[in-house]
Image (cartoon, rainbow, N blue to C red; front, side, top):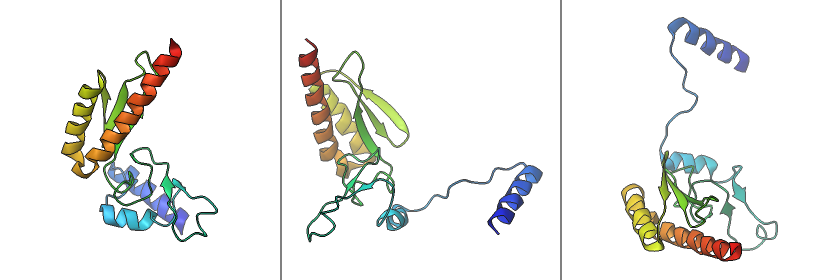
Length: 149
């Protein structure tokens, strides 16, 4: 049955010249309902599953706090991600909002202002989390710069 559907879609594509969509756009609520229980990014400790209070972490690329929650999910929402860049400037970072990547350079106050403006436009509820993340990246960059001397 699966092979038939694939062959039928390929024939239809070659006859009409249109592409078949490889994914379907759906609401963040539906996406979260599908990936909430299990997905490849969830990180749970074995002891935490037996405890009453446990936290699940996530390894998603656009998850600022690495928490497996609806609010922070990079799969369910248009993600806002920040990662450090190991180049000549160890305090530089790259912030991704949706599909657009923006390089964040300069002193920390300039970085914080840029991150706050970008995050306020896309996901205002994650502004504080984004500022925490850029502070951690800047702190790590300062210590890397001090070790390099």
